[in-house]
Length: 242
Length: 309
Image (cartoon, rainbow over all chains, first blue to last red; front, side, top):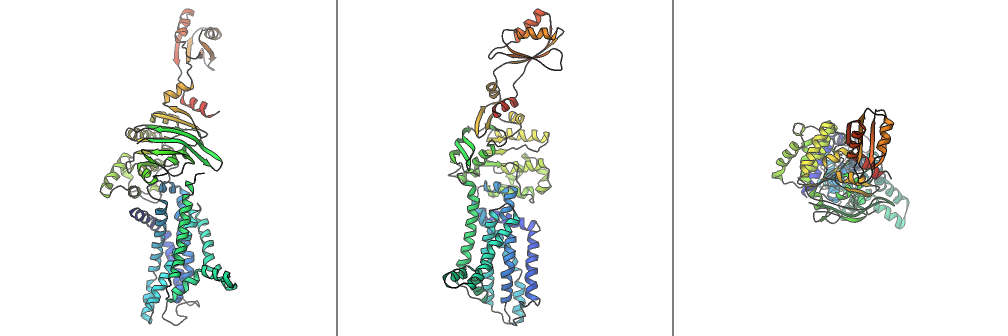
C-alpha cells in the first residue's frame, strides 16, 4: 500500500511539474464552462430549472476527450524513455504500478471536477437545487471517467507513442460513448439490447438524473477493471517464455 | 550474495538470443561481461534483474530464484540499465528519495542513505538540480546512485561508463572496484581496457554462447601460448639477420617490421622460448642487440579471435 502511494505521489508530481496538468485543467474547465454558461442551446439557463443536468451532459462529452488526454502518457512515455525498465525492476508488482497510474489519473479527474463546484454553489443560490441528484451526477461523472481511464491506461500500455495512445483510447471509448447507443437505436431484439447495455450513456443518464443503480455502477467498474487487467497483461508480456 | 545462472536460454520467437549459458559470480567478485553487439549481454542482464523471464534455465541470487521470488530478488539488486533511462524532470534528490522509498528503505535510515549515496557518487553539489540539466557524465552518476541507494547485495551495470570523459571513467571504475570488494558485481562493456582494469574475471559471450571465462591473464594464455619477441638490432645487414633468425632452432616465423631498420617480430614455436638463442646469436655474430621485448597478446586480439569466427 505504501509503495502504491509512493508511486501515485510521483505520478501526480510529474503531472504538476510539467505544464500538462494545468493546460488540461484549463482546457477542461474552459470548454465545460463555455457550453454550460453561455447560450448554446444546451446551457444551464435554457431549461429554466435550478438543475445541473445540462452541465452533466456537457461533462459527459468533455470528459470523453479529457480522460484519454490525461492517461495517454502514463505508460507510453515510460516505454519511450525506457524508464519502465527501471520501474519494473524495483520491488513493485505490475499491478501496483498500474493501480498507481490509475489512482493518479483519478485524483486529477477528481480535482478537475472539484473545480466545477462553484457551478453547483451558484445554481444552489439561484433556486432550489436537488442536492441528492447533484451528488449522484458527480458520482456518475467519476464512474464514467474511471471506465475511460481504464481504457486510456490500457491503450497507453500497448504503445510507445503518446499520440497513438490517445487515438487508440478515443477509438475504444467512442465505441462505448457513441457507437453502441446509435446501433442500439437502429436495431431491435437481443442485439439491440446488448448494444444498449454496452452504451455508456444508458448507464450515465440515470445517474445524472439522480438514480443510482448498482447495475450501472458495476458496468463502469467492470470496464475499469477490464482496462487495468489489460494493461497489466501488456506489461507482463515481457515475461512470456518466448 | 552469489549470482548463479544455470542453463539459461532466451528465445525471441524462433531466434535464440542466449543459448544455454551457465556461470556463477561469487560475493566480492567483479565479473566483466564482454561480447560484440547482439551477443546476448543485455538479455542476460535483464533476465538476472527479473525484467525478462528465461525461456528455460534457472537464475538464482543467494537462495532466491528470479522467477519464483522476483520481489525479493529486486530488493537485493541494484540495476543500471543500458542507456541509463531517468525521469528527466525530477530533481536528483527527489528522484533518489523516490527510488529509496520504492526499495523499502526505512524512513529513519533514509536521510543517511541519501547523504551517503550522494557523497559516494559525487553528486553533493548538484543534488537540487533537475536531471535534464545535467551533463551525460552526471546523469550516469545519478543512474549509478539510484542503483546503490538501498545498499544492494548485487549490482548489475549495463555499460556503466559509456559517454563519460576519461577522468570520470577512472572515478567510476574506482567506485565499482571499491563496491566490488564486498558485493557481487556484473558489468558489461565494449571497452576491453576497462574490463581488464575493473574486473576480477571476464566472461566473453558470442552469439549467445560463452566462448571464454577466466581472468584477463588466463584469457591471454588461452588464446596464445606462443612467445612473440620484438627484436631490434643495430648494424648488420637486414637480410642476413633475417636469415640467421629464421634458422634458430625454435623459430616458428620471423617478420620484418615495416618502415624500420632491423626490427623484427619473432614467433617461437609453441611452448618454447628463444630469448637466450637470440642473445647468443647476436654475440656470436657481433651484432648490437638494442631491444629484446616479449609482446603480450592484447586482450583485443583475444576478443577478436574468439568472436569473429
